[in-house]
Length: 339
Ligand code: EPU
Image (cartoon, rainbow, N blue to C red; front, side, top):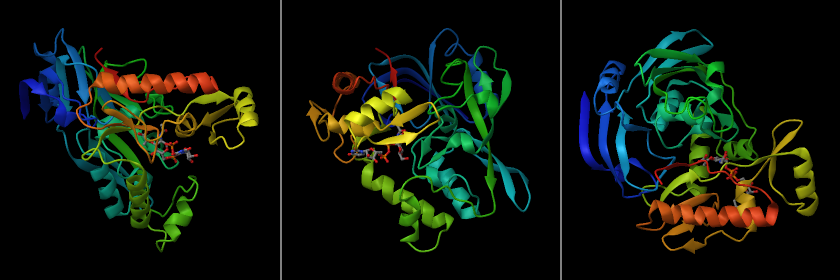
């Protein structure tokens, strides 16, 4: 199935709820169809944008090009023994549906990433992460099509060059590949990641340490802190947590003993962007139709009919005050589209 629409509203395809239009939107059902789409006049010499759940995008203007969306949806076991299972999942599967599938099948590894919005393909591009786990920890390989030639290519985990919310697909080869499916390695023996503070105690408070209980705990934690995009437009964390060298960290920590931070390596420390924004007094503030969520100031929200420019204006004001107070440049995690 190839579904093409022209002059289409992107409102249903971005969780910020920004009302812009695209010249063209094409949905594909299989990699063979995507190849056909890539050869067509709708794609050749046009600006392209691949949208998953639209949960990490901020549209600044109408999109004068073609938006591509995957409807390639399947979960297929490639190999399995008593300890492990290897599954291939279509890029168009909703990420959290896959997490539910894993929990129901007794597969360990994806549960800490419960309720993250978006699709499987985008998850592998963005290297989604939460509660001590990143998707790279379970990605075996990524199947993609090369946009200019339509050639299929398989990227092993190493070749994806994963980093914090980073991969080769959004870095060096941005716009060059479209992910069609992702192969995951999951465990079949109980194994949990409780690195995130208080996660284990929160799970134990619910009863036994099971996949379902871990999922339920994480769902509750997220729902308590992060707004539901269906009710209040947002794209999760707007900024990345800044990573600074130990000397810069030591200087800040000396001045602010309650600074919230996480260990990265012997030479670097990650600072909580939420803490920095909070200490600049932004929590719950609004600028026109754009606001800072009161329960998690790393999340910017659309209070109703905000434009991309309204949200960007708020983001820039926050960046400026964090820089003036702490000398740290916050980088958006959200991708700005248009100008
Ligand atoms: N904090 C404050 N004030 C607040 C809220 C938080 O100072 O009002 C400080 C606290 O010290 C808290 C710390 O911020 O301990 C960290 O907060 P949280 O545990 O919510 O994590 P985060 O670093 O703000 C990251 C990810 C989230 C992910 C959570 C949980 C990034 C940019 N964000 O947020 O991912 O869900 O950890 O693991 O790495 C996303 O990427 O869209 C996202 C939501």
